[in-house]
Length: 129
Image 1 (cartoon, rainbow, N blue to C red):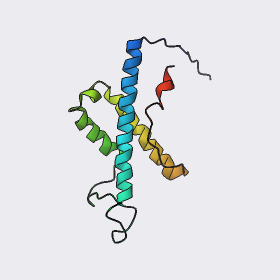
Image 2 (cartoon, helix red, strand yellow):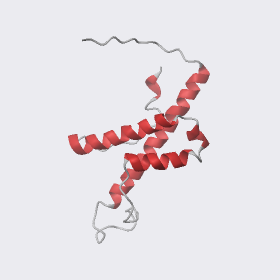
Image 3 (cartoon, rainbow, N blue to C red):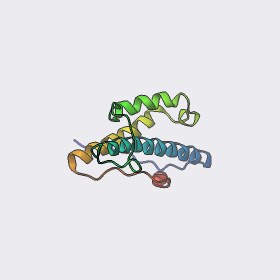
């Protein structure tokens, strides 16, 4: 059995390129915000309370749940209703961004990969060049 694939070269117009850039920027912002939320949660629980410095540690309530894909997707759904810039991007695209972050954390814990990094603005602009 074999798979037959077709490859098409896209030639987007300037308006489409701007549209793609906007989507990529919104995905990057969602990814970085979700990563910062998880990183803050882990940092707040990294040391015992009697050894933490009040100046350098994050203070997050103890009853707050660990950020997961499900929790962050629910929060994203609520935030999309109030943010016009996120309403331009399809919800599945943003959910896949959160799923990509979840997979990065799973591979970090199970396969000893490094901690996920924040994405820079120009890191994903080469998709359609």
